[in-house]
Length: 140
Image (tube, rainbow, N blue to C red; front, top):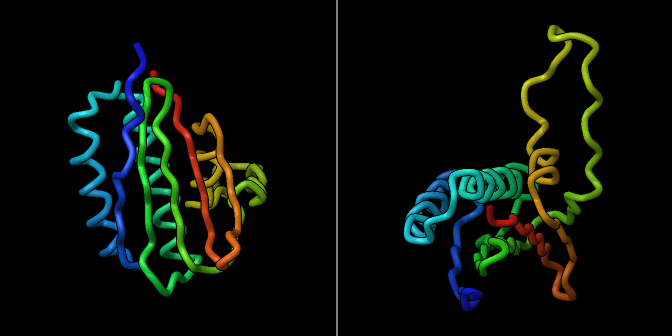
């Protein structure tokens, strides 16, 4: 028996780290009654964190970032929309593997993680000049 798709959960946050943190708390509260298995919930929260903080830190949105979250019995879908710098996360190259642990850099793997955990990752630049990134996480 399929779940009716849950739609209409929208988070709006200012393009600041403080705004993002408030949205992350709201996301966790929303996910509690969804009773997702631990691995799926971890992936949803990780995708939200990586994409949300990248938008705030690198895309310089002037208006609020809008995140819509929905789920059915197959997947959880997060859709981020913002007016920041145009950036397609699918085209960002994976960093080159370091030759040694001493050469390893901290950070820079967030988009790699999101691409690896996503059932699908889509991007479009809308007609009104906004970025729309959609990531789907398979359930269980």
